[in-house]
Length: 127
Image (cartoon, rainbow, N blue to C red; front, side, top):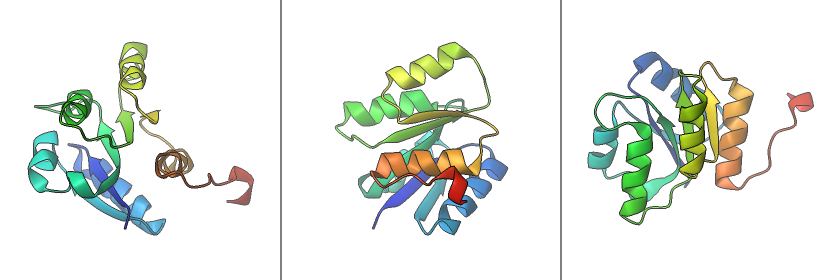
C-alpha cells in the first residue's frame, strides 16, 4: 500500500491536506513536526512525503537532507507560504518533485502526488 506522509506544523493545513489525500483514495499519515516524523517509524512505509518548508526545529529542507543522508530516497513535495524564489530554488535543488506555494489548488497537489507515485496525471478538463 502506498502511504503519503504529510509533515506540517499548521494543524489546519495538515488536516485539510490529509482530507484531500484520503478523498482521492490514498492512505495518509500526518505529523506536526519533522522530529515527530523521524521518530514515528513511518519512514520505511512512506511512498511520498509532503513537507512544509518552514517549521520550528528541523525544517522541511533539513528533514529531506537528513533522509537522503541516511539512505532514504522518498519523493518529496515541498509546500511553503513564503514566495521567495531562493526558497523555491533550494527546494528544487534538493530534488523535490514539486514546490507549491500556499494556498495551492487541490488539483496541483494531487498531480504532484501522482507524479511522485508514477501514476497518470488527471486532466484538468475532466474534473
